[in-house]
Image 1 (cartoon, rainbow, N blue to C red):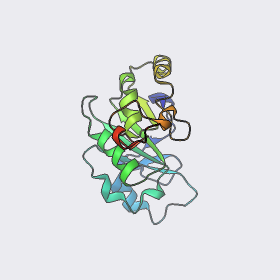
Image 2: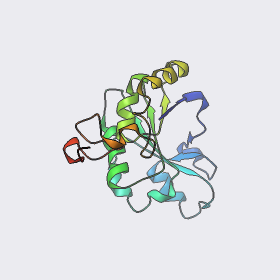
Image 3: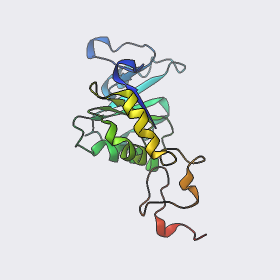
Image 4: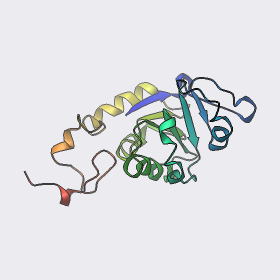
Amino acid sequence: MRFVASKADVWAGANDSDAVIAPHRLLTPEQWQALHLSWPTNLPVGLSLPNSHDVRTLEGSLSCFAVVALQFPKWTDGRAYSQARLLRVRLHYTGDIRAMGDVLVDMALPLARTGFDTAVLRADQDLEVAQHALRFFDGLLSFPGTDIRRGGSVYYQGDALDPDPLFRKAVA
C-alpha cells in the first residue's frame, strides 16, 4: 500500500473534450467503449469508476487496464471498499487498484485490507504524515508472499490479502 500526493499523480482523468489516446489516462467506461478499438496494446490505460458502478460487468475486459481507480466522493462512503474486494477476490484483478477522491490518511488499513494498492490523498492531506502512519501497519499492508499474516491471520474475518477466515486456517 502506498500513498501518492494528488499533485504528483501521473494518472490523469480524461474530460469528455480530451478523451484522446495518451499514456496514463484514466477513462470512464463510456470513454473506454468509444476508444478501445483504437487503443494501442502497449500504451497503459486506466479505468475510473464511480462507486455506484457494478464492477462485475467488467469481468471480461479487466486485463486491458493497468489501473482501476475507484472513487470516494466522501470519506464516509464505503462502497469503493466493496468494489475493490470484488475486483481482487471474485474477479482476480491483479493490476493496481487506486483510491481517489476524498481519501484520508486514516483510511490506510481498510484500504489495504480490501485490496487497494495506491491511495491518492485529498489535497489537504500531508504525504509525509501518511507515509509515517503506514509504519504503524508494517506487515499488515503487504501482499501475499511477504505478508507476515500468511501463517495465521490476526483477523477473524478474511480480507482481500488473506481471504480465508480464521476458522478455515489450519492450527499450527
